Length: 317
Image (cartoon, rainbow, N blue to C red; front, side, top):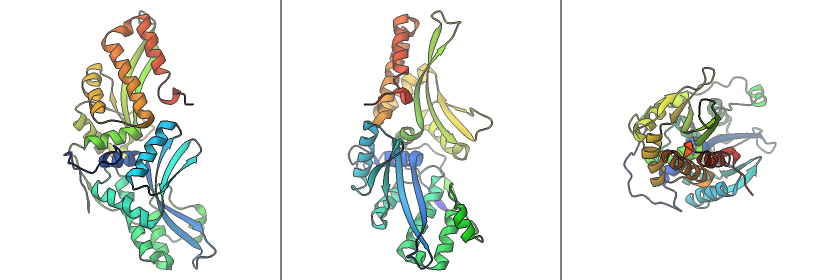
């Protein structure tokens, strides 16, 4: 059994380029991938090449590129940043360099069920280091491990190795206590949203309203984690937005909670990249609403401008 430690207390740690280690873990919990990659290789005796990769992505824009450069700096400038579609991807694939990645997550453990895959990924790393991946027995074991990963095995691999039996996932005892605030910031960097929901409402005197909301979305398998975040923040409701989808939201829409808890929290534990810009606009919107200026035409116009320049509406040069 693997214990998923919490480390709530904010200890003095080595902060590189302003990124706190727990921020790195939170961001990785939401946005990273620990991958086992397979490709055919005529040069290999077994006809298959096996490698492992740590990667983390962000939508393409200048601010997010700065963030990924900071992540790369944190990991001692190991790996590379590339473009893939509308995303930047920071990747590390060398076993020697991946040891730095592994050490970080052993010291500052993942808090989501992604921990399962990290533990299995580490097993494959050890096998590659011991050259077990060059033996048939080792290849079969690695395929057994990869089969339980989200993308599983390709049809081509299954056809070549039809008798692969999925391995058992490690048993992890998840912590139920409060969670480190820097981890929360990193996780929100990946899976959180600050929104000023501009909507038409006939019952309103001016015909429109703006409903601010802070939201974190996650699969139901991490329901315990969402409850821990609510406990740590001291606010938020757990909402299942759709019966057909296996996900839950933490939703905060109360102005008092937003202005007295959420805003001060992210002022203290800073976000980065484009998410920081969204937070700053969100903060401006909350200030307008707190001053009751949203009840005026001028205030509503200001909120509309903010709402339509945030998140996916934001324009980049």
